[in-house]
Length: 411
Image (cartoon, rainbow, N blue to C red):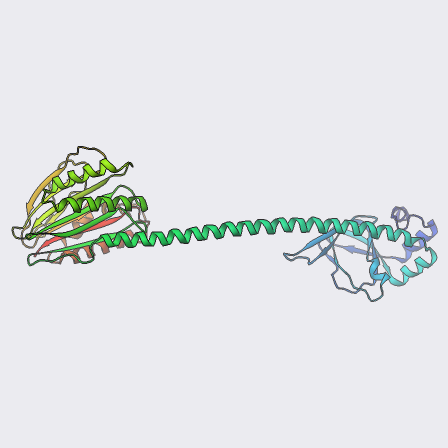
């Protein structure tokens, strides 16, 4: 049975039966477990090995990211002959068992004695070496082709990533410029008079947003007070916000009523604006001599009044329509006298809609409750404390909308 196995190996196929018997009695049998290393690249070569059963991997840099399998030897094939031909030679590659493997081991001395008795074995060895060289060349070429493909893909991915990075940096710079332009539209310092002071805070949900506020001198002891909320976020809303703000400010200089100012601004927006964006707004005129505040609401949140006794009221209101959707709009127009010690708070719906990590909105009642405890504070301090209460409630949860506060306090 064993002799027949040797006879099937091309290298020994022409040997007489008695020689095969003698070899079987002399050659050492080597057993390898799966993944066991027979020898490593660079080891001294002293034996020729014949695969009797199983498969043997010929490879370089085993168990590393650069591992390269050069060939797979099957029963009847052999390896290590070059190390025997060249005395002092070293293994040019390693060998590892693929599954359990049984080998026959031939020493350098046994190999030389066999070639002396049967010189024609050299021809068989040359044929096997040539075939093995061809297989190695094919495997190497295939591996290099694959690595070139991977390198090309990595280069293409890197190039695409670089383009995206450049584009991202460009957009970030443009957003920074847009944010700077937007913040420049808002007042740096709010005015203060002998009888009234003002306060404001704004926090965009993104780098730029659609909320805005302003307080500006109209002359004759009168001040324009404006707060607005574009129904969107990001750059488009910021552009729309800038247009709406500019139009309202321009119309306010014509000495019109608050309602007429918003109606004229709406006429301009609906005439030129081709998008579906719209803006809610509250514009009022405060007479600092009489304490009267006349205002008009275009779909905006009704303001809250903290009276001198520390009670918070939501001012009476009627339905109103936002700017930018219809040519003819209905507004909620009102007026009141701000008594000494009172504080009027205007805000955008980002304040009421802001949610905590559980998804619960801050809501109107929390605004009223917080405002009730701010009696006697300046308008700006009141806005700051309301803002801090909101941030504490939000507790790191995602902000979905811009938040803006604007307050008037009668000293």
